[in-house]
Image (cartoon, rainbow, N blue to C red; front, side):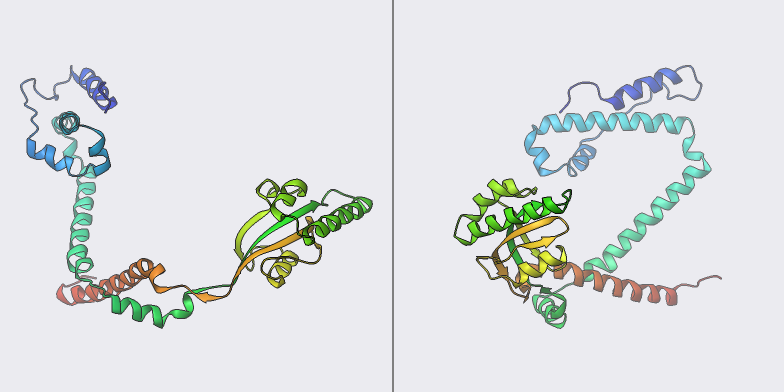
Length: 279
């Protein structure tokens, strides 16, 4: 906690200093008090992690100082009749209405929804085709960049890539070979591209990777607009359904949102019948 005077306190001092010669300022004997109940209420909004970082009495002291600052500003604003301003009244009415609506929706809609595991599983099974994880591959590659080369340079680059392919096919450790020879940004990481699905790589590269055998070096040089690639298909996963347990919480939120919307629409119709709407 910052023991120095806060910016809000400084602003308060400046404000009172600037207004000290006006006739509408708070009288000197106006009492500003903060109750223990108010402090405890504000304390309830402080996160547990924050509470653990500072002594309780220190937190309470800071909260009290903050409340005093707020009440000083409030008292002066009232003394200056800001609360009588038309725009202020409209804004307060808007806030009041929004808070009431929020409370009503929470009590009548949100708290009324209960979702069982059986209901979630039924939803999962009914929408099973939406929970498909497409085929993916995990690959490494070595690239010999040809983007700025003329025809002679490209020929030399291809010969270089072919020699690297021979070394890879002979059983050399692919990651070490990539670190040594690759001219791409993944070279220092052993050419690691991680897991990816279809549509994420350039067409020629994607075709080779998905047609390659798991745990083997692709037997040909692959040419793309970036250069010549030597590819190692490290692992593969087939198309499969995402397990229910792994998306259970996501499903719950989705079902909650659907139910909330349905109940919201139904409640609106109920209220339209209950109250007269003037056109």
